[in-house]
Image 1: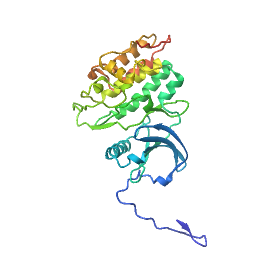
Image 2: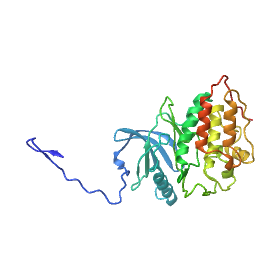
Image 3: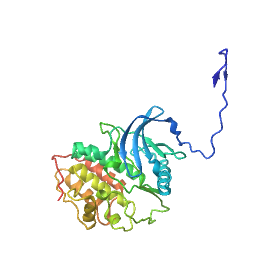
Image 4: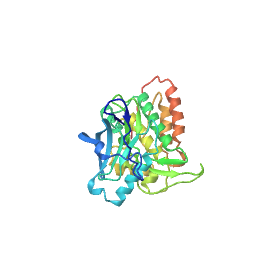
Length: 309
């Protein structure tokens, strides 16, 4: 609308029709300000930058220009966009938009000031039992949402680097980075939806994935157990081994030894269930939440620690 010359009336400026086949989340790249951008992550396909969109800090995953014509890269990028656009949960990183029709391809999500859990653990080392439980519950809430039927999303790369703190006070966590995630449509609770292939990070990889055997959403439960152990211990299980050798060690049936007091028995049992070699024995994230709630409500009289073999 524009004001008339005498200031007494308003005239409507004509509005151009929307572009055909244009998604409402498509972002005009000229609206992204990289003048004071900071690199907050790098990968083989691109980088993640903190930039500004219409004055708001955002995280931008930008595909390397040299790979913008690679068919598989484009396919994976569009898959991640199509996945993220469906997600709405307090413990899942929020998708804001994407640049899909110009180079470089970019994916825009909310920017979380607290950094990732990996960096946080590097500074804090082991966490208090209460903090570890609260963090574990945040992760479990996000994962329970992703695993809900009929549209089950298997993360397949759940690890501390892909869990983000909302702020520097670490008030709560959000699950992010869905580049390797897989959406599975389930028609009934009895459906079997299993895949094969070595996908994810060795340090947190379920044995069935390492062995290239059929697997399902319970691979995320295994990774969750490894993260919970790391939050309590201060370092990943079998950190004395290289990631590949550690994954091989786990695939052969080895697990870290857990010794605990106070809350120990309940948490020890939960961790052991979550990293069970038989994936059918692992609990769902809804069951994990229920167990964590009970553990949280139980008073603790002793400090306790976990020790890896």
